[in-house]
Length: 100
Image 1 (cartoon, rainbow, N blue to C red):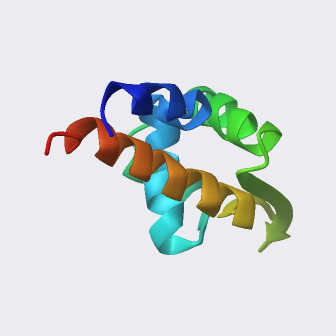
Image 2 (image 1 turned 45 degrees about the vertical axis):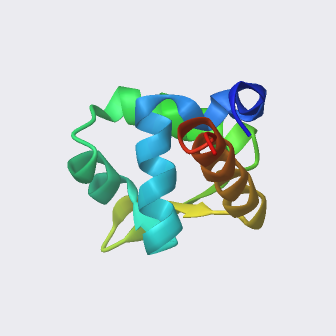
C-alpha cells in the first residue's frame, strides 16, 4: 500500500460534489433531486452536471417521474456504483494508512 494506490483513485468519484453524492446514496440508496441539492448545498445546474457524469459512468441511475403533477427526479446508486465506491474507499485507505 502507499503511493501506488494513487493510480486507483477513481476520478469520476473524486470530485467534491460527486463524492458527496456517492456518500449520500451509499447510505440512502435513493434520493430525490431536491433532497440532494439541499444536503450538498448545490445549485441545480451544478448538481445536474455531476449527476450526469456519475450516470454516464454507470454509478448512478436517474429516474424521472411525476408526483402530485410535479416533476420528480430520483437518483439511485447502482451495483456498479457501489462497487466503484468501495474500491475508491479502499484506494483512499491505502493512501492514508499505507504506512506499516
